[in-house]
Length: 154
Length: 202
Image (cartoon, rainbow over all chains, first blue to last red; front, side):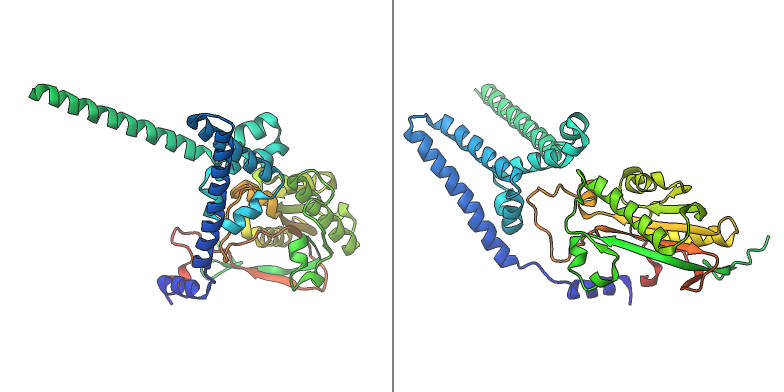
């Protein structure tokens, strides 16, 4: 039995995740979170807020809800059930910052909470922000080039 | 120079067999639900064991396991010459704090899954080399502290695959001795490290 055969044997024997069921769960919970967001949007617009402010209110409320549920030890159960359904919306991002903060509280407020808070979300922030800057510069230069080209043609 | 204790490529035979005088183990709640729960000296009801942090709980588990082992063996802790112990945390913190008040010279070792086997091998080498009469070997791990150290916070809402491994919450200890009539260690074979993993499957 060589290495590849052994790997295949192990893969055959090990139980698989129920892919379809997991997708359905993620779809249901993710949809529910989006529906809650939409409800908050309608509520805040019925109070007379303008549209741009309503989006902010939705984000703030969902972040608060997710952080609160994380602190109550409820969100990790939702996450275990729903997977990407609760991870991909803004709720997952809030959870990924609050959970290390709670976990590392035992190591103190500065070296624990302060420095370890972004262990999970840190890479997302660094590469997300860097990529957005890169894309923005790229778009800017393309636009500049096009307008320059157009000017020259005239 | 002739290595008379070395046989073959990487195996070693001890000149005199080393006996396992006494063993002890304390485990957490998940292990209590398993089929081996009757074999452990103590099963904990929760992961904290009246401590504030998981690391402190792991330290307490290791300390209590060592105490149980020593008191079961009915030998004085002053007649134990060395302690080989390890765990999964930074600076082997739970073992070094766990044996801190025991007054036994302590060697911290790190071998991840193989820590306990490693401590048994080193302990038997020390006894076979006539450096010690009794040696204490121990290892500990804690699911929550290991998750915190190596993986994600427990509060993070991620999913585990069905084949995900679960680090043991618990600790085991054994006292090796020159004279006894229990099970004995006669030989050992440490695996050679190479970057291709275990050669058996090549």
